[in-house]
Length: 182
Length: 98
Image (cartoon, rainbow over all chains, first blue to last red):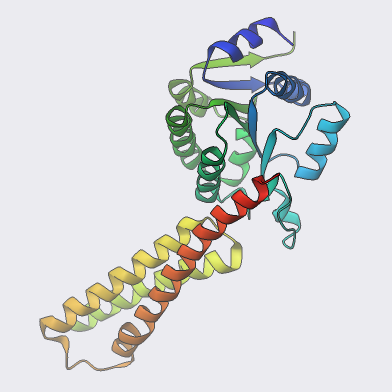
């Protein structure tokens, strides 16, 4: 992984990662692997991939999922009857941002050790919600992350994220990191 | 004038119902339930204001709706909102137990 990114991850509390689609999976895996190996507890909010597919991918990459808690906002869009499993809670849909905030609060309060929140991804949330709603949610979430004293990694895809949103987010995050094609 | 007030009350209560139905049918954000509660509450308060301002003779289906259905729905939605909040808390704690 990029040394500059590692430095940013160590030094900053809340990072917005703007990733080119070609590097999206690789970046996700690298960051997760780095933070999990550091011994941090992770709360992973997935809007892109269903929990089962994600765990399969993480197992393939030999990333331990024992120290990860997943909040899945996408599976119930396709399968209404799925029930929560150990390590994962399924929320109704990516529209349910208040439900997400409530769940995050309970998850953060339950874990006593050092932790991080990984939001994957803001660009997918934008498919389901208005830009204003996402902007407000991001502001709320970054504020809460500081209050909870957790590290925050917010991923968004380049080209799919509105410039206005990125400039607004730059005010809430400690650092913005672009992962582009060379 | 009284008729206009009654129609406004009805519209507000109807809006409350729409929010609640949206919540139940489309699995919307929990906040929809809250909007529904507010609309029902405002509708009911408007009705009470209207009633004590000399609207007591206007006994129609509107009034029956505002007096019986709105508070009942309000109670149901307050309960389901609380229930959903509690359930999210319990589900999170249960899913995190390893």
